[in-house]
Structure formats: structure tokens, C-alpha cells
Image (cartoon, rainbow, N blue to C red; front, top):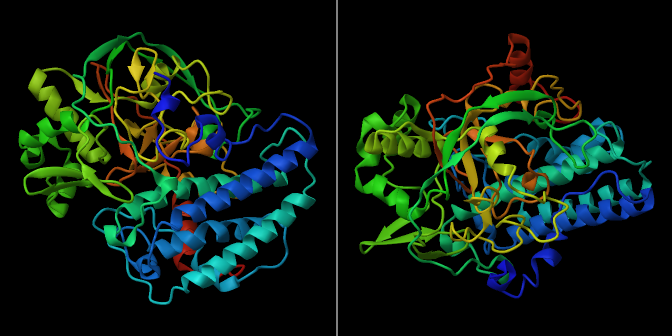
Length: 496
């Protein structure tokens, strides 16, 4: 069956037409005039899509609720992505005047580096939603003017002024996804169901998972400096890793498969958990995945804007600690060495994808908002011998993020990656249904603390080889002092 026949809702006319709103730009095609037009469109579509997401919140008071105690209220993220554009354009001297210095300080720095037992302190002077909407309108106009006057040459490189515009766009697309996770944690009464966010309606018992043999080999990681799409600094460099033969699960781990772990007292059995994982479980007292609900002995799943009867054939969505505990449980159950896949092993699986984003004509997975605005069955999108190598939900890996050799921090955003090079942030690979822009590319490298939730699940592997860990800590005493000064010190250039 053609995947496009499964699309629900008026919003999705075809996979190709919608993905025009979301595909990251090619940096080296067409003329400068054409590229300026593409850049305008990409910026405006991104800005509008972000506001479309927030329009699902039906009560202004909900913007000020702390949906996740480790994050700011949603009002912060509504303003943050717009402020990012202005602060970066000021930093790179593409504009000389601020729009609103107070906002451009207040909304500058998030709280994404917090540990699971470090609760956020409330902020009591957030501006009104209407004021931030007005500010976003001003930013849209300012950035549009900058794009119109850019000295644009091709190909666009990371030293060009246009790169900072792309940086702002791709930054907002990251927050499109992370903000959707926060909206998913709001009380349901505050979120509207809209036709633009229609969910998959396919649900059944999943096929039995199985391990498939995979031939290893030398995998070369790292994006080339002259690659034809935007990349974050951690993507660049060169690293060769020899991957041993392994077996990988044919499907992502489904809700139904994960239920067996729960029924076997997985959340109550200390031996399945890492030390970090058990401390988190004891602190939170969780007994099942965060978005699961039990009511009248029936299971339900909370999506972004509604609850549905549990779709057992959808991928389970958990954090890294839970996925790791499941693998340890499975290892004990079958007396095999089961673990999460590594970044390099994921890249071995990805070699079966013949047409890479953004040049594909028809998306090969549930990604880039092309088919559904939710996960879907794990046996719907086949890619080689496996399903959902890309798309549906992200896949947690056993690889903490670190730099590749020849890493350079981008001078306009030198703290994007470096604070995560601490062995506390694990990579997620493959993208989810709402991963757009750079997130949907094969080379993207995003990582989160192991207790965080994204639209992420996992696939497991059988291997006698422990995960490769590249220990490179950039958090020197000097850097740590600068980092603390940036967050807690004085105000510089109207940004504290």
C-alpha cells in the first residue's frame, strides 16, 4: 500500500506538498536570487509552523504552567526562538539595534542542563502572551528585512551571514519538537484538537519482534565541511569506527513488548537498572512510561492533544534509563547480551536507505510531518530489512555525545554542543514524526540527559562488544568558570 493512502485529515494533501514547508535548504543549488527566495520561504514557514503549534493551547493561563518541572513554562519557549534570532544578529553585527532588551535577556537562556532532582524555580514576571505575539511579529519583520539585504553568495557556508539565519531557523525547528513534548504534558483541558495535528488511527497487536543479523565494517562518521545542508557544529569532523557484526531488532520496541517488562516487575527490580536509573526511579516512583495512563483497568496513551486507547503496535516512548533497564531485563530473560544500539551501529542500519532527506521525492518514514502528527504502527515503514530506521520516534543510543576529531565550535553559538560533552547526554538517532529541517537529516546529532523525555523510544541489539565511548571532556576549569559567569554573572550586551 502507498503510505500516502494512509494519511488522515485535510491538512495532509500529499506527503510531498506538506514537506515543502519543512525540508531544510540545499546550500549550493540555483542562483543567489532563487536562494534568497527559498530562505525567505523557509524562515516564514518555520515561524508560522511554530506559532501554529502554540495555537493549540486554548488558554493563556496554560502558557505559565510548568508542564515539566525541569523546564520553563511554555511562555518562555514561545518567546525564546524569536529572541534567539535577534541576539545572534546583534552578535554577528547584522543589526545594530535591539527590539526589546528586557525580552532579549529574559528569554535568552533555557534550563536544559538540569539534573532530574533539581527542580526549576518559578518566574513571576513573565510578559503577557499578547505582548510576546507582538514581539514575534516585530522579529519576523526584522529578519525578513535582513534576508532581503543579505550579501548572499553560493554555496552558503558557515562563515556567511546567511548561516546565522539558518541557525535561527533550525534552532526554532528543534524547539518545535521539544515544545510539542511540553504541550503533551499540559493538562488535556488546555489543549485543542485541531485538523492540523491529526493523529494516526491505526492500532492493532504488533508482530513479534526478532533479531536480524547485521554485517559490521568500518563506518566513517562526521559531516564534510562542504556538505550541501546546514549542520550544527557537533556534526562536523572525521571519525572512523570499526563496527563488529551484530544483531538488531527488526522493529522498534512496541508498547506491547514493553508491557511484558512492566508485568515482570521491571520497574520494581533493582538489578535491571543502572545506578543512575535506579536513583531516578526511586525519586520519581514511576511504574510505567510517562505518557501511559491506567483508568478502570484499561490502558490509554496521552498524545499531544488527546488520549487514545493504548495502540499496542506503536513504539513505546521512554527515556534512556527506562530503555536501558528493559535491555538488561531482556538480557536476563534470554541469557543474551542485549543493549541499546550505538551511534555507529545506527549508521550501519541507515546505509539501507537509498534516498536521503532532503532530496527524496517521497519520504521513506514517518518523519518531517509528512504522514502523521503522532507515532504510528512499528510495521508500517520498511527500510531495507528493518522498519523505522528513520522516523516514527527517535532511538536512544548507548553513545554519549562527544565531538569528532577536528571539532570547532561555531563562533555565533559556541555553547550549543560543548556543555553536552560530559558523558551525561546520550545521542538519539533517526528522528521522529515531528522532526523537520536539520533534525531529519542522516548526520544530525542531538543528545539529551538520560532522564529527559522526547518523542523517543528504542531498538535493541545483541552484541558481545561493549559500546564505543569517545571520552573527550571540554568542560575545563576555564570553560566552567565562563559558563557559570554567563548564567549567573553580570549582564553583558543586555543579555545576562
